[in-house]
Length: 399
Figure 1: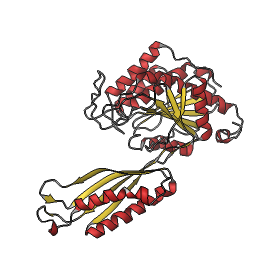
Figure 2: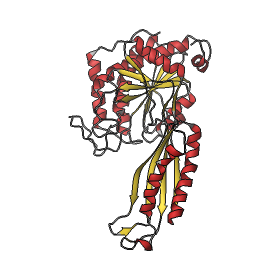
Figure 3: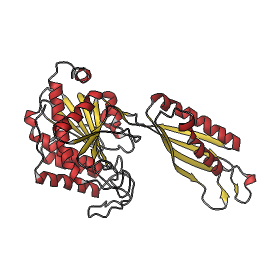
Figure 4: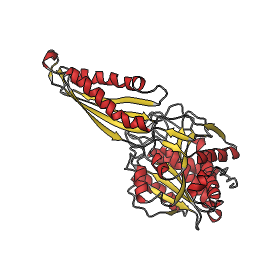
């Protein structure tokens, strides 16, 4: 087991908060994180932390440690959301309509802190720690970019985090097996026949068709699949018409489906097509489904999930078993190739993720930095102690 890494230095805690507040003031949308990347890169270089020369447009990968030992990875995301901030603080977003409403500024500060702590112990690390500052999590393309660029090459285990506003600051939670859901997006184009609003009999009402489809979609989870399965279908956008006295020719619907069961995930598009086709036919309209598969479910490796909780307990942190989440995470793509686990960090915010008043507790940043530095070093020791391959080490019953 790695020895405890101190993180009581007040100046470090102040630096972590300063990093987070700067990133919060200058949020950038997915795949546009150029200033964010430059800022993180500058601080890593100032701390003499080497950067991997990967072909990335945004985002950066740092590496700490030397020698031929195992390599593990830590991941933070860095992109923001198209939300107008309503938090009244002096470091509020300076970019109109863009906000770190999911706490990726918090995540980046945590991993910058972990990098600084690990750098101090670089000469005694029994391997290498690779730290991902990943773009484009919100649009589920960032992990793919990093994997294609080779960030995951030679990595034996990978660990990620997300802040949890419902948990107290300083609390850590994770679970074995499924954690975050499969995420898919759909769009439905409905075509009717335009007409004067006073003479609906001369047209085919695309709005009425859309309303029937929205209502019917809500019956799929409860009437077509087992009530024991986790399944959510949400319509999140309806767009049609441009004036008050005309029945529009077309209406667009958009939404998301969240599942855990792979078989149900595969079946859902066909069931939706059958449903919307039948409703449209009955009302004389046409309906076309467009399906956009997103990231798969986050499935934590049991041994690494248990290990990560034990490290937190040993350090005196409050540890909880995380509940299943119907939200999604492209961290799942790393776990398809490499064992590891995803951890929730308590951020104690009155308002939840993606809310314009989301405001995480900054006192949670330093404990999280210390935790991930300890977890990384302990994982290297665990992998180094075995003579079998990293994957075999994780799956071994005796580990």
